[in-house]
Image (cartoon, rainbow, N blue to C red; front, side, top):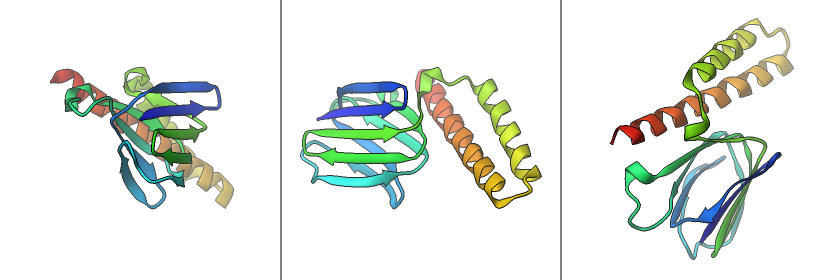
Length: 141
């Protein structure tokens, strides 16, 4: 099957995949070739991609995504999101600083709208840090 990860700026990833683990609003799901058709909402989280049946943990690719829409068909998975970052693109120091700013925004928010926006930013930066950590661990193996 093929995984297509599309952001507002264009196609982020378009390649064959043996399995894809996706963060949905109902929990994580893993998709393999021949999966039943499905359309669901994605939540902010980590996408894990194994290119082949024999892909090791060290060769698994990770992407941090914001929420969006997931379309699954027997031959492809298409994920449409605002933002997606590959593990090797994330700079941990910058992400930690962005997380600290988002937490400060959340703590200083005066309206519900400000709190919700800050909460989304906190979640987004936490996911990016998780992907950076997964990528760092992968490199050590």
